Length: 464
Image (cartoon, rainbow, N blue to C red; front, side):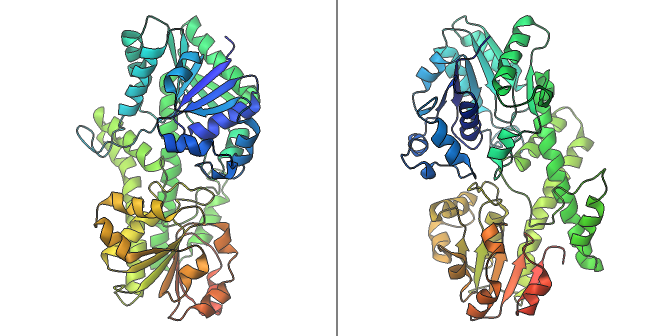
């Protein structure tokens, strides 16, 4: 089966960049990204391609190349579904905040709504691709909905989880470690559907890097990959606390173990904790799945990764309070960085949100700067926590447009995101321009502590 028209439901951090690359690399395929959020679609269609709603290095250039040629963004979901041969579902699957599985299970209401809309609209056979991160056996539920509520057409369900990392999404999509496609390997129809998606990726990905499995293995592989990566972060962060108590240097420990070829150097940088939309959500989902099968020891093992991550954020904030003579009430604290990592404007589960919350509880006055995150998003993130009223948040938070304005007259500076521009700052000028005692708290490994201490900072880092 040759794919001529692709529809992607969901114009977010996965759907937008992934479809842009598919369109760029497959000019003969019409790719339409749809979303009911009119403001988001308008941003994707903005004449100035630099105003697209997702910041990723290189993404604007990809969109500029394909948009209007074979890449389109629309709010007409029904039309795109009707015309598509293949439909990607790339909508949000947040952790449930209610009912059975609250706080752990994935909330699949948006997935179900997509399935019912596809079933209602589709008049010809479709291949439906799970692109969102989903619990094992979601494909089975999708199949039941589509087959039992549709118009008698045939649906094939594939799992195609995304392994891109925000901040490097374009390069990850251009040169993926692997493309994973799960489907029905027991029927000719299933094999044909798998091959149709293989052929799409084969425009730029070598066949050796395209892995096909059954659908259940594909779904579980995504959760497992994120769990393993998050586990490494929590492991090195746990050791950073031990280093502080024993006099060991976490950077030296990380370098030593990272040179072991069996371990490797990646994800061994002690920090204030992991964030983003995937790690915590996927681990909690894994915990819930394990508990649902009565595998309590398995669930406890993975839940500890989350517990350690939460602890790291709390102790980073507590370290700041303790260093500042056990009180930050009325003191100006500069937070540099709000996105959960550099080179993205995604703030979901960012460690900065929770550190800021702890400091606000202690009545600190926060001044915040991030190169790609605006004031509205910063305030919305804190409002969503519900710790304080919106008025209280706005009374104690100032958002500025550059790092120097944030640092000026601050009692302390905390590095929350490893943006390159923070590494390039003239820290001697920062120190000289500050009017109060200068404390620098680094959760993201910017400069050698001795350089900072030499110009007058009292430097505190996770693992120091």
